[in-house]
Amino acid sequence: MKKVLIANRGEIAIRVMKTARKMGIKTVAIYSEADRNAPHVRFADEAIYIGEAPSNKSYLLGEKIIEEAKKLYVDGIHPGYGFLSENAHFAELCEKNGIIFIGPKSKSIKIMGDKLAAKDAVKHYNIPMVPGVDRAVTNPKEAADIAREIGFPILIKASAGGGGKGMRIVEQEKDVEEQMARAISEATSAFGNGSVFVEKYITSPRHIEIQVLADNYGNTIHLFERECSIQRRHQKVVEEAPSSILDSELRKKMGDAAIKVAKSCDYIGAGTVEFLVDKNLNFYFLEMNTRLQVEHPVTELISGIDLVEQQIKIARGEVISFKQEDLKIKGHALELRVYAEDPTNNFLPSVGNLNIYKIPTGKGIRVDNGFEEGMDIPIYYDPMLSKLITYGKTREEAIQLMIEAIDNYKIEGVKTTLPFGKFVCKHEAFRSGNFDTHFVKNYYTPEKLQAGLDEEAKIAALVALKIYFEDQKIVRVPLIN
Ligand code: MV4
Image (cartoon, rainbow, N blue to C red; front, top):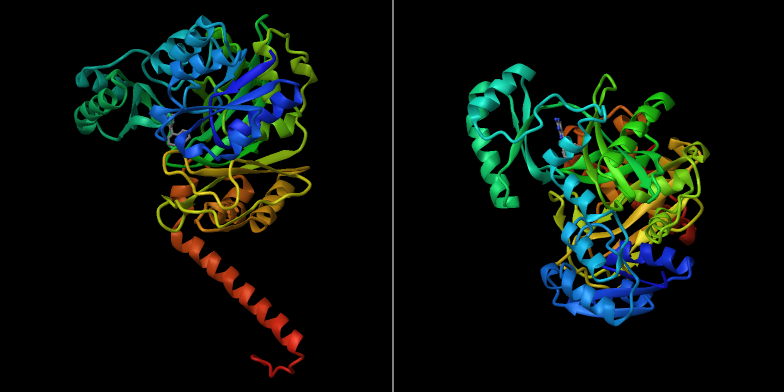
């Protein structure tokens, strides 16, 4: 593989290019009208203009991207995350055009993209599943019967859904009919597929996912877990590895289950198997993400494995060069997603110009960044500016590094989720490890964040005052005795 096209933008495009370059592979960027001067375009060896700013006129135009790739004799396409990364048709189209899709086969994408097909694929592998049904339910009476059997609350899920879209919690029998109808109509309009199923609702779970790697020769391994419970409306905010609730025994059980999930769909490449873990540490398979995930860096830091390098090696037909037994967790990593969103105003996108944008550096700090000072933040795409990743010997060290690194960002022009990240890192529930997927809903209010910001402003003002007086050599009258 001599030349790879990265069908993406922002931090992930740059992240993938860095590894390709390290491996001696040439890189090709694609860009939309809004990204003519974007960092990922300048970072690449070559760049191709695809189309207008909206994604459906540029980054989602699979056929156009392949057509341009062929003109430049590209050998492989890395899709990053989002956009075309879980588009089975695109993966197939690449192969049909003699270009390697750096990802799984389209068959695996198809199976795991459909939650019922996924349940069907894993059913002979003895994977723990949430109590419920593994077939589409259309009749509310049938749903009520199932609910009575498994017990309320239940969760109605869209088969074509995922990432929290098209889900309905139902607490009582009298609400089943109405919520069913809503779930079906939501799923029909959102996915063009009204198929729904019913599960027992796990009320306060942790969201833990396992990173897997599989080559073309039947070798499938896992690279431990990521704890992703700190999320807001299905948008992850802080991720970490390892999870403080897993011991080596549970880690092995979940790792083995994840490997079996990957095998059930003949998975090849890097993938992630999502689980819910309940209060009693029972775990249940939820879904599999057939792409490189946003939060992959925390796994890279604790395992010492470059996941993009592994993706490329596997795609060009190499055998995974290490065994499960060779892998060991070393240290602790945290990731904060830095979004241009206002945490004091319902996380509203805060678009504008990055008048000042300075990112922290130092030992134990990694920033995967897609922006630079002076840039306007395009309104067309996800407003994530960068990912702040910290790595320490212990969890406490990684948290402390995170707090300091947050303070060392200098951003003016837009509001960001940095103060929110600090709120999480300073919260007792997070520090003690005693939290679940409801952390944000349970503990966060804009007022608490504002109080923290006001306190910091006050301290900053007092420090400034102190420096001022010292400079002036003015003898102060004590303010308080
Ligand atoms: C669940 C659940 C509780 N019980 N399934 C959310 C996203 C999608 N991957 C599945 N999700 C959930 N499925 C049962 N049977 C709770 C969630 C869920 C969740 C899962 C992971 C991370 C955050 C979440 C937030 C709300 C709900």
